Image 1 (cartoon, rainbow, N blue to C red):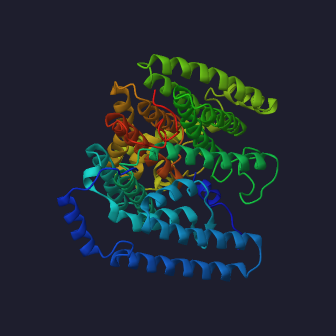
Image 2: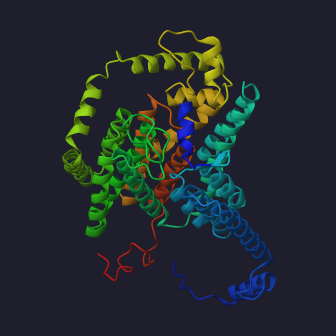
Length: 508
């Protein structure tokens, strides 16, 4: 069976420890070691985890080898996906922080196999082995309330859904994503470099995605297959607008990192991110997606707005945006620019696709007002078939082409309230923060990415792609983590990877 991107199917549905230990502390440490065993010896729990991990690797390798014997490159790639998933589960069980890194790094690259897909296997398995690490005290009240409301609303909506299994799938997806958010807040709370490294991983993965988009544009369909919408590349994603939205989020985060690197006089990092940003901008442009351009423009505008109180940062931001916008324009092929200009010129609502989108949005808003408990994930198409008769709607679409409305249809008014809480609070908190620390600038980049995603979501819905649930909670976590760093700066003299002491430089 040939391996194809699962999103092609979905698209049809639309530290240094230097303090000496005192006498009492030594006794406590000896007592702890007496309970857990000699230093260097695994505890019983760790031994069980290791054995379970070894068994997982063995089974994954066995399945992989059996699959490889079938011979084709596609089956060999399947085997690699299965083995990597097994290894990821082991790593997450022993080191949940590494498991979260794996999740962010691999979630953009989804493949379907044997009736499921790699993203579902990865998210479900990692969440299952990491959930016990959640600490309620580490989860802000608004995050807990918003996440639980979203999950509860999704399960309640599935009760009256026409297709219960599909609605439950959506509810479980949100449950796994929200649990991953809680794990990240618990495990990475004291890792001062976590949010910076997450952006590094996010940007690197996006660059790989863009590479395959250019290959698609050139007619090379290795691994990702041909795009669904003519010549508009979608790379590993379901649809070209979904791909463009992801790359726009990465470009917004990269812009924030350039600002921070320039402020810290890190020329090397600023140069690397500058090159990455130009590449990402051309990746957005090559999609010719109006939604992707909206996400990028709204993200940049929000980044400026959130830094209005930081004069030097704002001035640099304006200069950077002007320079890189020009560089991206120059790097984009003239034919692509002409196509974008043509599509923007026709964005007046008279196109058949635009009329259909507006009709779907109207139908979705009506359904949301009629069903406060929601229809259930994936069940909007049944409502269209049974209750909507419009000359502008030519088929039963999977969603209503408007994210807030569709979230309400998927999870009811309760779930919509939880989603809007998770979306809006990071933006509100960043805007209200008067601190001038650079961690707040990074938080503003996370919040701006959320704003860009929602701006695109006013005309589309991207959460049928499982990776976007992870992207969404990652932006929420990044804003919370960065704001917490700004509120609790590192103690004087503490050595961190970005401190002058760590770089061998004298503190300024």
